[in-house]
Image (cartoon, rainbow, N blue to C red; front, side, top):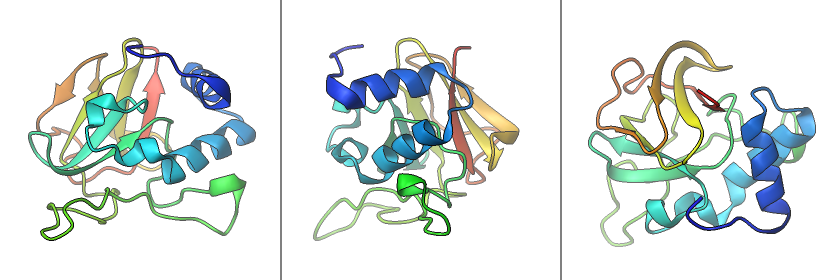
Length: 162
């Protein structure tokens, strides 16, 4: 990584990234971080410890969201493992006087492009929730200016080893 991850968050990140299907405890930790971490809406996505970035518009334009953990369903984030207390993952709200395109919109079925800044893991964005259906895949340090298979039809995201 470009900078080391410290403490419990770093240890949890390493565990969540190395396991394709995380346990309930790891999944809820990932949901908590993806929903509440300050890393999710860093002003400069490439400086975030969260290494996957989704953009509202093609060509990495408009608002974005940094994601650090796999997301089973963009519309059903369960912080603390709560059920039925689920939340939709949303694009960051940017541009105080003139909001950027997509600010505050739900990510599900709204992302047009993505970027994988991770040095080791592949990023997969899926058409359906639960890591199912058509997908666009980004190798380490790859970006897609316009999704081919999941353009504005994306429901989940997962890190894989290839």
